Length: 310
Image (cartoon, rainbow, N blue to C red):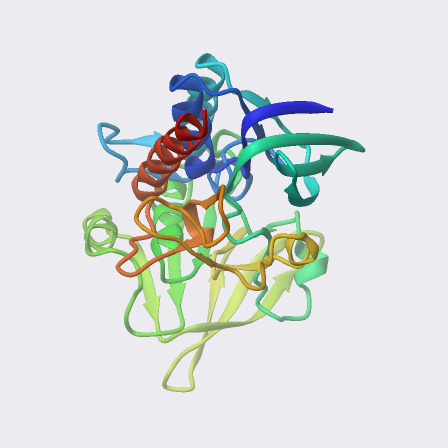
């Protein structure tokens, strides 16, 4: 059994920041991630550009994720990638975690679970399974691997807008959204407007057409008309369905997609902290920079807790 000062479950920006700052403060730190370190940045949107992270005017999500992980490891944090935590609970020395058939104990625990593991939200159309990987995708592939002339992006949030702008480098792009207003930040909307992308509002894709590969999509408009758009690539970015079912069985009293924390990222359970999308408090702003700041705060809180106990 391995023992550490701090265990971090979840490898997104908040978890990596907690691991990095914890190790920087001299704590022995182990971090667990069920997939690749970087969380949503690398596992959901690796080719999405990040333009709102401090001191980074433009960086691909996967590159930012790799830099965060490299920095955490550089300070001495042990990062266990593709090693999901199967169970976590209290122990006489703090907490005990089980993963890969082994047990790990830690004096303090930071949960950076995000919203759990994700399944892309689907359109619910006949043909989705048939065209998956043959013109239909739910995550933006690496731009250099895309061979498409006409791309259609579905969605109205920042991911849809960033995806459309990225695809414009290699294809003609149409953005389709079922509402008249967008959820994307004003800056993102301005960039799309300045780029001259074709935007269809009040439209919903109702049919996928093609043979062995997607060739076009049929869009139903608000005035009951339909239009057919050429599309050898369809990117559906209408959200992800989170799954937190696995952690509910942990012996930590976790009952929902969030856990309440105070300004020190402490939960009601002594020694247990939370950061990122999993942490909830009044006035929270869900951004990458916020998650990184929460990780720093949690690490400082853990250091104070352990030093006061010695």
